[in-house]
Amino acid sequence: MSLSHSPEDVIRYMLIGLDLGTLPEDQDDWPIYATQEVDSPDNTITVYGTEGKKHGRDFVEGKMAEHQGIQIRIRATSPTVGHAKANAIAIALDETAYQDSVTIGSNVYLVHSINRVSGPLNLGKELGTRRFLFTINALTSLRQTT
Amino acid sequence: MAEIFGLHAVKAAFQKLKKKFGKDSPIVVVGYTANYAAYVHEDKEAAHTAGTQAKFLEEPKRTKAKEIAGIITTALKAGATLEHSLLMGGMRLQRESQQLVPVDVGALKASAFTAIDRDVDTAIAAAEGRFEAAKKGKKR
Image (cartoon, rainbow over the protein chains, first blue to last red):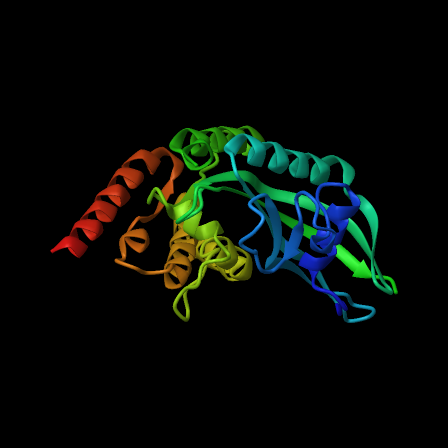
C-alpha cells in the first residue's frame, strides 16, 4: 500500500476534521502535529506512527493488507484538561470515526476504521516540565482514493 | 499510571478473558513491573541508543506474532501442555522485548516477567526484587 502522506498525517487531519484539534498554522487551541511534538503551546496533540498489523497478501492484486499503528499523544497543563481531551478523542475514535474521507491538499484518503487498542493511558508528568501526558494507541485501516 | 497497569487491572483483564474462553483456559501475561515502564514504553519522543526504543513490548508482540504462535503450536504437537506451550511463547516474547528495552542501569530490563495467571503475584514479586537489585547495583 502506497500513500502520499503518512498514516499519522492522515489521522491528524481526520482529528482536525472531527473538531478535536486545529492546524498549527491557525494558531488556535489544541494544535495537532504529526511525528514530532513541539515545545509550545502546552496543550498539544501529536500523532505518531507505530508498528502495524500485517494480514498477508491479497491473492488477486498481491497487495499487502495491513492495519497501520498510530499513537495519539496529548500534552496538557493539567491532568483534568488532558484527561478530558484524551477522553473526547477516545470516544470519537470509538463512536464517530468510520469511513471518514480525509482531504490533504489534492490527495483524498478513506479511513475505513480505527480500532482503539489501549488508552487513554495517563503517563503522569512530562520529564522536566509540569505538563501532563496521555496516550491513546490504535490500529487504523485506510487507503488513498486520489 | 497504576490505574491502568496496576495488578488489579491485570487481574480484571484475566477475569474478562476467563469469561470469554472459559475459566479453565490458561492465560499467560508478559510485562514489566518498573513503575516507569509505561512511560518509557509510550514515550515516542525520547531518544534512545541504537537498537533500543519505545514500544519495546507492543512492537515484538505484533512483529513476532506468527513466530510465537509457531512456538506454541510446535510445543503442543510435541506433547507439552497448553499452559507450558503458552509459557514458552510468552518467554520468547519477553526475550524479544528485552532486546529492545532502553537500558540505563538495567533495572527496567530486569523487571520483565512472564507468568501464568495463577502465578502472576509471585512472578511480579520476583521481578520487583530483580528491579530493586538492579537499581541498587548502580549506586555501588
